[in-house]
Image (cartoon, rainbow over all chains, first blue to last red; front, side):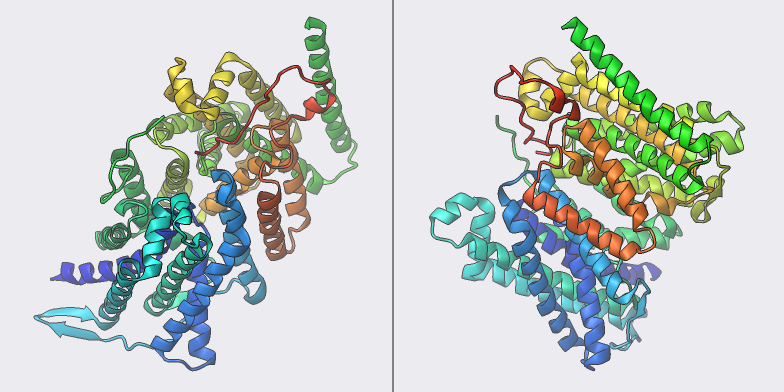
Length: 291
Length: 321
């Protein structure tokens, strides 16, 4: 029954990746930009949650909401200041700017508070729940619950609201959407806001689960979340969720087999295999190249 | 035109002699201490890295952001060749370059089928895998690293820098180089003109990795200690920034920006946070207001040339698409 516990751990790690990957995939879907700064939004989310809990004495859910709000503002700010002008420029200029923004947020954070890690307060009780002879970590279940709620919320926004409709339209064809009277700038801002809010939530969850956060924490989960997004098919929202879960389970599996040093490599090996054999991802459709 | 070519050769030759002579004179007469000698070596290494990536991104238009992986391979294998096998340093450097080129071939074959952002992420992934392999390889000390004797001198760095520049400049001006440029401009068009695009993309990638490997060898023998931490994503970004800031498609731009940025980051060495904050700000501002980089696609020699007769001129907007 060991493996069921590992599976639950994997799913809760995967749900963190999935939450970050959703932001990546939404942004990529709408403006075809690899938002490298997304991992840093995740980091800011973790720190906002931390300061909310320690200085404002918030409990978990208010801290989570605070982090989501702060991150969505940050996301919109990044889009407005850095990415909006680049919408018509080359891919590489956009990519380099994203890297620049990412480094900027990391090192401003280090400049103001140093690079030392911070211990996250234990705010959700960590206990083992026994069910049918299998021990579950209560935190893992809690994470899963929150993630599922957020995902249902996201699905609702994307498929049932006017803003969601606008987002889907812009990602399909920006110029046509503009001709139909959709405010493209606002729609893109909203996409950034929603994606960043999810990353912020992932940050708080990460802090709670792994109990240690630092200003450089966003880099690796950010890249891995991108792997998850590619795995599911970039630009496709359910793909990012599934990709995140698969990645989390594989990583936990590799660790459980005793190769924890190779955990990070596993993600990249998956990435390369998927890029070589099925570049459009699990849910993606193959598009033919047109001249 | 023949006299023109000869005179350009001599101008280049004399410039090289002067630069080398100044460096040699300053070091031999003890006018600069080891700190500045180290700085000169670091600049040479960074220029090699920048120029080798310039061939991949600037000339062939393949967006690779994992150059630090090949740099790491060169660094580690050169160290293995000298420290564990006792080979002489220049031989070890060349062998390390070859190992790195082989790695470039292995990485390039599958991933160069991809384009744009996907290629970028795949190369980043490969670089991380390479780093993790070194991290877990006990033979080279794993995470705690391995000690390496200092063997890199200004002379070695300069000679290899010179070789890199000559090879890549000549490659660019050759038939093969023009094939690579045509791939950058329009891959489909190049393909339909009968250019074997896969061959040239992999070739450029292999040459780029070769020189990155040599730079790695110089690097590992310049600092007494070799650790996988030094070859992370940030290092790849550093090299990428040299190329992009200098101007995509401009070798002299890559050389200038590698020199300038190395000087700036050495100057701010004691305030690493401020350094990185400024660095990233400069990067964002340049990309927003001058996305073609400092030199655009021009070479510094173009400034001395009379008006070109070519109409239309090159455009370099297709990189990474």
